[in-house]
Structure formats: structure tokens, C-alpha cells
Image (cartoon, rainbow, N blue to C red; front, side, top):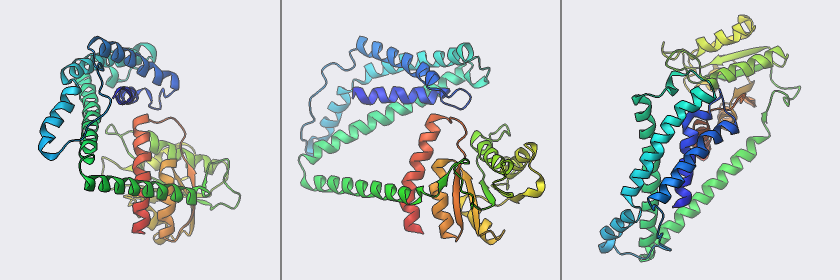
Length: 343
């Protein structure tokens, strides 16, 4: 319980924003996390949040389930948790504003303290806590029932076996494609001369996202260093609110790439569509895939499905938002076996 709560506070520190690319250093990340951990620890001590932790969860039967769950909730001391959570959230909301404006000297509007900012972060933190405490409660209910019912133990063991098999599948897929992943410096001399650059998000203010910018800048560097002759800018250009390809072309041209070396693919709505178009619309048999590392395994797998002889170059040129980065990796890795089965 203590370890889980500390992990939640650490995630809150990451989510607070100090991990985004403008100031993503370990020093700033710790600068947000450590004070919050101290406030959480002191307030938890004052409210005796972890006093008299039980040593184990006993067996329970269906007819005893309701009081058992009530005891689990009572053990978690909802009132004390509410006070400690509120104290930590209020502190961190003020600390975010002070840290960004007073220490990092950022004038970003989002980090100016306001009621809206406070509500945003308090709601986000409440979600973290509710998810963690809810999962902890559910896990202990299952453990309690499993001690009384054999069929629940069988299901639990089966699920654990399936999880291990799934994890091994993810590992094998990554090992299989890892040899086709490169950086700009390690790119082989006989690499394809065309780069396929994948679109990414455009912010509501019309600014291309950090991920999209890095993909384009990586392709630009490949061109400027004489490693490619042309690049396909593939993205969702179907809506004025996104117009990824317009931004991609503009960034490349502003960096000195002639428009004659840029091929537009306005219908690369998703990864598979971009790869299909490269092969069947633009007639490319071999390309260099340009995207972030978390995305490249899925690209390589899908490219093989469409008959492309491709290798991947990582476009990770900065430290991204930590929570987003973790989400990208986890989601893409979890989907790999499903893509393998589908193909």
C-alpha cells in the first residue's frame, strides 16, 4: 500500500509537466517529485494513514463478500486519504506554478496558477488515486475469493500463464525487428534513398507537435547529410484542424529542402495507410521509415505485410512528456502480438 501510494505521487510529478521537452531533465523531474513526496509523507504521518497495516488478506466466501469489501475500504481510511490527497494536490498545484515561473522562468499560460489549473490537476490526481486504490481493492477481493474457491485459482493461474506467453511474444517480436532499427549515424551505406516520414499530432493552436517536428527534422538531416534523395511526407491532411502534411512540408522547406525532393501523401490517415500508399501509389519498394523508436517496430511489421523492404531510423531528438512517452511505449508494445496475429 505504501509503495503503491508513493508510485502514484511519482506519477503525479511526471504528469505535472516537468518532463516535457522544454525542460526535461532529471533535475527538474526530481524538483517536482521530491517536494510532493515530502508533503505526502508528512501529511500521511500526521493523519496516521498507514498505521496498523494488516499482514495478510484472509479467505472469504460469496456470502461474506459485502462486509469483506467494506472492511477493505475501511482499512484504506477514506477520510484520511481524502485529507492527505487534498493537502498534496493543493501543494503541488501551487508548486507547479512557482516552479515553472520562478525557477524555470517559463511564461507558459498553462502553468500560471488559476482555478482552472487547480481543477485540472486535482481532477487528474484524483483519477490516479482512484485507479490505484480501486485496483488494490479488486486484487485483494480476488485473492480472498481464490483462497476459498478452486476454480478462481485455476482462472487466476491461467491468466498469469497467458500474460507470460503474451510478454514473451512481445519480446520475440522486438528481438526479430531490432536489427533493422538504426540512428542517422549508424545507417548503412546501402540504405534506401527515400525516407517515409509519418505524420503526428498538430496542436489546437496550429503548431506542429514535438513528435511531428522531430520526425521532419530527422528526415531533413538525412537529406542534408546526403543519405537520401527524397522524402515522402505522409499524414492526415483531410481536415483544416490537422493538416499534418502542410506543416511537414513547410518545416522541411524552411530547413532548406527543395520542394522537388518532397512527395506529398495527403491520405496517410494511419500507419498502414502510409505504408500502403508508399508501395502502391508511389511505387516504392524500399524506404527508410522515420518515426520515434516506440513506433518503429509496428512500422517494420506492417511494412513487411505490404511488401516494403524497409529499415527504420529513430527520430527521438529530445525528451518528451514522460507520461505520454510511457503511454506510447506501453500501448504500442501491447498491440504488437495482435498485429502479428492479424497479419
